[in-house]
Image (cartoon, rainbow, N blue to C red; front, side, top):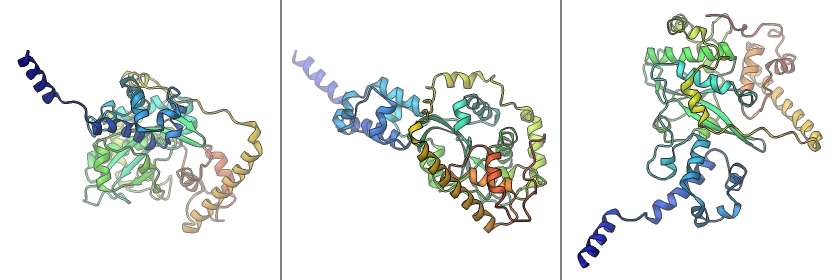
Length: 372
C-alpha cells in the first residue's frame, strides 16, 4: 500500500498542478482580448449577456465563470485562437496567407461584401500595414507589407467593433513577384469597389509580431494613416489621376491580372466554398442599433459639426496642394476615421466642390472603372 502511495506521489510531482500564475493568465488574456478590440470590461455583458458585471469585479469572480465553451465563444467572436486565451502559447491568430494565390484574399473579401451590414459600415475594407512611410520599388531595402481585412461584429455607442484578418505572407516591396501580386490585389479591389486602400506605418518590431500572429492590430490601425500616398496611387492609370505612382510597372500588373484571371474577378458572386465554410463557423455581426428619435436635434447638431470639420479638412488639403482634384480630396477625407465622413462619395463631392480652388473646379477626378 505504501508503494502505491509513493507511486501516486511521484505521479503528482511529475504531472504537477496548474499554478496560480498560469490560471490567472487566462483571466488576464480574456480581458486583454476585449480591451485590445476597444471594449471596456463594463461593456462585455453587452456582447456576452451570460456574464454579469459582478463576474468582472475581481479576477477570482471571473475565473469562476470561465469555461472552455466560453473561451471558444470569445475566440470565434474575435477570430483568435482559444490556445492563446488559455495561455498555452503566444500566437493570437492562426496563420492566414495567400500563398501566391491572390484569389484567396479576394474571395474572402467577396464573402464579407455580401453582408449588407458590412457594406454599410466599412469604408476601407483592405488596409495595408508597412514598415516604409513612402514605398519606392527602386529602394533596395526590404520593406514588408501586411494586408488586413476588417469585419464589423458589433456596435457599442458610436464605436464599431471589428474582427481582423491579417494576411501574413510578408509581401516585400523590393521583391518584384510579391510587389506585383499585392498591386494586382489592390487594383482588383479598387476597380471593382472604388474603396480607398489606406497605408499605416509600423515599426519593424511591430511588423514581426504582426507576421507571427502575435499582435491584435486595432492599435496600429487607429494611428494616423498615410493619405499621400495611398496604396491605390500605386495601381491606377496616370491619366486617371495626377498622384499615380510607379506607373511604368502598371503593364506588368495588368499582365499578371490577365494571366491569373483576376481581371474578370466579380465581387457579386458567391462561389468560394472554403471561405464560406469559415464564414459559417463565425457569429454574424450584431445588428446596428435603431436610431433614437428623441435625439434628433442632437444628431442634427452633431451632423453640422461633422460637416464643418470635413469642410475644414478639405480646405487644409487644398492649402497644401492646390492641384489635387476634388475626387482625390474626397478620398483623403474618407480615409480619415476621425472625420467620420459620409460613405456616399457623391454627397461628399457636392459638399466640398464649392471649396475647391478655381483651377480645380470642373476638372474630372479619377475616371470611372474601366478595364485594364
